[in-house]
Length: 244
Length: 183
Image (spheres, one colour):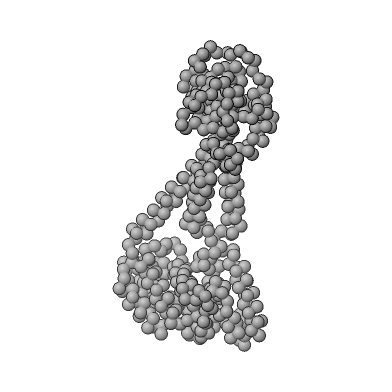
């Protein structure tokens, strides 16, 4: 039987040719490129998420409908799914490609998954959680002296005066009068933008005391003292800007 | 003559240009692969087809073999996948109809497995082995019949090296239980 089988195998082999090496090289290269692209996307998505949460702070998500559990989240649901999916795919491909998927103990893999979830969770920290930090005294200190953003980027803290569809005027916590411009990319968070609402604006300076807003965060009245300190003295503007 | 003394990995690399190199590998491994697939599938005739398919796949994809790794592990892996696919395809909803004669080596030589147990119990143990799930059977086959190292078993079955020991232990436990039930 063995000899017969060997003969059969040799006969079947004689009718075939090995696939050329370039096919395998192409396959591996293509897989590596795909892997690198997926990982880059995942890292960018995650990195942006962290950046937005930490640096742009509180308003990063476009306004979700009032009452929605996603209101104030740094990520939208589809972004979360995409980022997690990409990361999981990337990690799976790396592990599979390097053979660690089966060579490493399961608990190491489980630990990696937990670490991934923790990082993703931190990146997606909802605003409602962040708000507790805002209320803490130390956080107030941070908010009063925000991290320098460099370039022309600027953060302004103040109280909305006149609010229109494409602009608003703002009195900052030092009494300066600002013209804040909105466009279709401006993000809002924290509630209705109404006159006298305490707000924080993040944007780019386009002229003295004129800001193109990236995002506007509206504070609740009860947070105002923590963020701004005592209310500004009326008519104590330190600039002569009167373009409103 | 010189070719026959070469390592498997060198022969595998040479097979890309020279089919005769692969014929030597066929000579070397047909028995072992056939025996392994026979035990996994429980069927001589099907095992022959699977063995043929294994070698054909190995030959067609020989350019994808990494010569830094062990050729035998790579070949066993293909054979294992082919056997598992066969079992899934044909025995999805029923137990493998096991032909006990496949448990004996064609040369009649004693395997490491046989040396471990008392002669009288060989038949019983082999019967129990036939009733194990294919994965448990595969790990015992590789460890005791094929005398593979833990690293090779891990490579063939794609499991963690340090879970090979516990898996063998678990499979042996199941086998013992089946033996007790049969008694």
